[in-house]
Structure formats: C-alpha cells, structure tokens
Length: 122
Image (cartoon, rainbow, N blue to C red; front, side):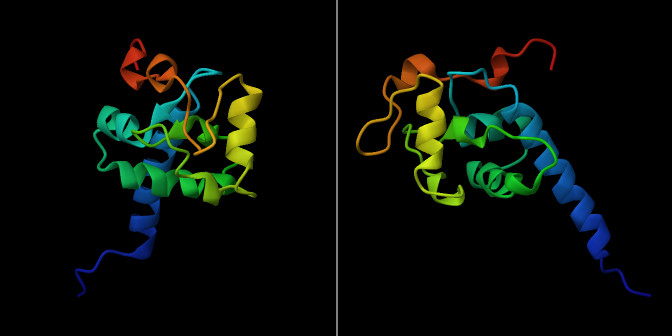
C-alpha cells in the first residue's frame, strides 16, 4: 500500500490556497495597493513568493482578480511580466488614479498602501 498522496489532494490544497489569496486581493480597495508580503502575513500561508505564485495563475480564474493592485514591498510592479502585456499592470493602476514612476514604482506608496488587517471581521 502506497503512502504517497494522490495528485488530487495536492490540487485541492493549491486551489484552496489560491482562493484565499484571490479573496483578499478582491478586497483591496479601488485606487489602493497592497503587497505580496502583507497578504501572506495576513493569511499566515507562507511567503510573499507563494502569494505571487498564486496571483500568476489568477488569469484562469472564473472571476476577475485585481492582481494589478498587488506590488512588492518597495512598490515595484514586479508582477507586470505576468500580465497579457508588460504595460497592462501599469495601465490598470493608472486608470484607478495611481501614479507610476518611470522605474515602474507606485508613487506615494506609503499613502496608497492597504493592509488586509484593515478588514473588520474577516
């Protein structure tokens, strides 16, 4: 008898992890940004890289996930290469009134930063 876990169990865990990341990402207010690390810390699910990994797969989700609102801790648009075009993340942020510098960083990051712990009763 094998003690190896089936692929199905692993897939269910991944989907659950992804869904938790997606749920928090969908709560980031319009015109605000959060970070991979803030989401990871809030959900106590692992590293910022794991949140990024989940968001890299959100384009296949049934609902629209505002992954463009998640940046790295320095405010850099580090996930921009995972969008349909490298400029799409910037364009979406700018359409929400968020200024992006020439070096692909959120201007006024401290002012626009939203932490999931601002949620009540999540």
